[in-house]
Figure 1 (cartoon, rainbow, N blue to C red):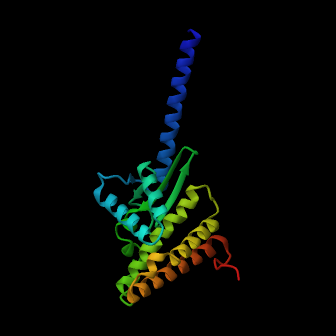
Figure 2 (cartoon, one colour):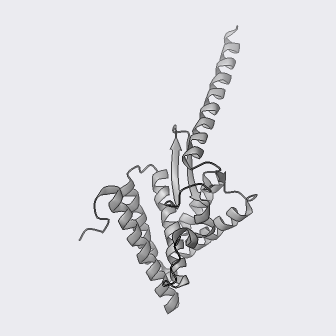
Figure 3 (cartoon, rainbow, N blue to C red):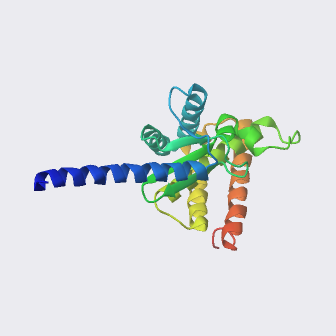
Length: 213
């Protein structure tokens, strides 16, 4: 076989091996998220519209850059819905073989974050307060998983990123234009999301998630 033909065969075999490894990595990601996963794309209208609604809410929280980045990742087929992801997770980042990276959103959390968060009904908490807590929790969880996507492996450090993000939301100008009752609901939801993240950070690190004095 001529050298040129040998090179062609070698390139073809290399490409085939690479794509086979990519598919194996993708399968590992899908299995880690519970299987039955799918990318967030227009043909899946319910999930796609819910995702765009979430992006709009994040923009109104005062972080349009995060909303835009989520859309870019969705367009790159790196945001997926996971119907079988456990109820303890809003979302999860999975990487396999350094070839496949995915952020998986629990399907129920995306479609109905209040139902995901309040699995036991809480009639003592007004619905607007529950909604504020749920939407902030979902957005904060995505910020957390993006920290992992960007290479941060330590779970406590990712919670620090999430907690810092809540602080940027607290300072966001759009919130200052809310009515009194809406602002009270939002403040309560924000404090609840922060408390949840701090408790989770303590579990992850064994140290308090409260900022230093």
